[in-house]
Length: 68
Image 1 (tube, rainbow, N blue to C red):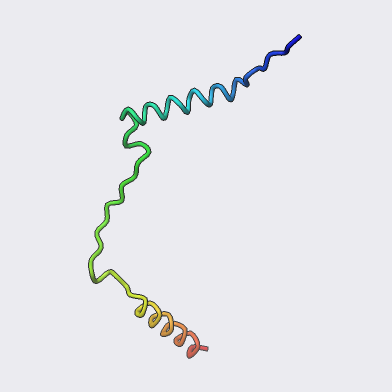
Image 2 (cartoon, one colour; image 1 turned 120 degrees about the horizontal axis):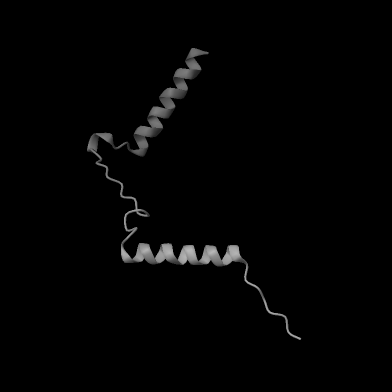
């Protein structure tokens, strides 16, 4: 006699919910819910070069050493 395999109710529910969510996102219902846009502006004065960062770190280290 063959035994039938039972599908777990939790796995079946999760699969149906996940498939439904993906379908709704694909059709556009959740189009903006899973998407993030970063709206930022960078000015030329806000950009720090590697040389400036190293110089600032060295100055900071020498200030700490002289304070001791």
